[in-house]
Amino acid sequence: MTEGRVVATGTVEDIVGDARVVVAEAEDWTSAFERLETAGLRTALVGRTLRVPGADRAAVERALGALPARVSEARATLEERFLQLTLGAA
Image 1: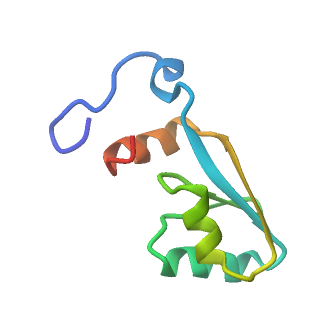
Image 2: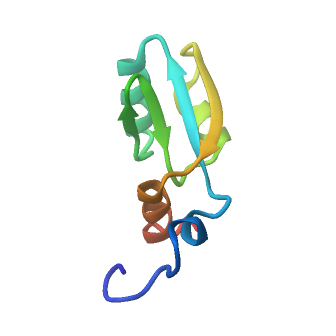
């Protein structure tokens, strides 16, 4: 639930389904994090990996610019899926 409305029901598998999240790996993860946040992309640091739920890969690549980074996609976690649903990026 968010703002008094149901955004999803079912099991974790039902809710997450095939949802994806963009993942960025950069040697200078601090600069990468700052660039993503400055671009308005909600970013979570997981270890030394940056996970950006609700964004598309092209937006992440644009935000990182020339900063050396590997950008890929991974299966979203339940928490990331919740963010996607509540931010309207379903």
